[in-house]
Amino acid sequence: MLISSKLEFDAGHRIPSHNSQCRHLHGHRYAIEITLSGDIITDEGIAKQGMVMDYSEVKRIAKDVLVDKWDHAFLVYSGDLQVLQFLQSIEDHKTVVLDTPPTAENLALTAFYILDNAYQDNYGNRLRLEQVRLFETPNCWADAIRGKI
Image 1 (cartoon, rainbow, N blue to C red):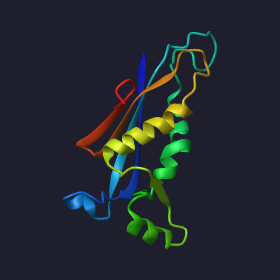
Image 2 (image 1 turned 30 degrees about the vertical axis):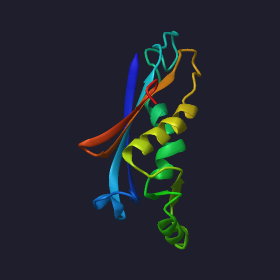
Image 3 (image 1 turned 135 degrees about the horizontal axis):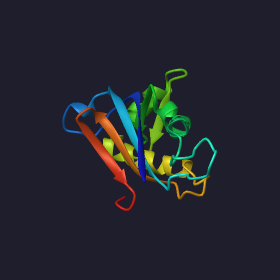
């Protein structure tokens, strides 16, 4: 069985080597869709009976390990030294430094690796992260899919 949950966050970024508008500092209303696989829990009388995982728990984990860290932050590539130095000069600025340019593809991949460590099979139902879909805009997204990354 597959289940999915979608969360939204706002963040700034720039793609320093881009040949068009994305080389400038700007922001997006990102959305992240998390897809998990697992068996439906059949244990009688427990709160999670009939579920793969409670959606509130899916969201809580995603918020704790990723969304709250990226929300209203500037996602900056460690190699973008001029912008990185500028952001570090702003007191208490929320900056997330990444090893790769913050394209939708790289953000989806980074999110997949972070979330893959966070979702554990605590119920013996073979819970596993299968896909992270990161929307940069409502019409443009990147998918990081287990077995294809």
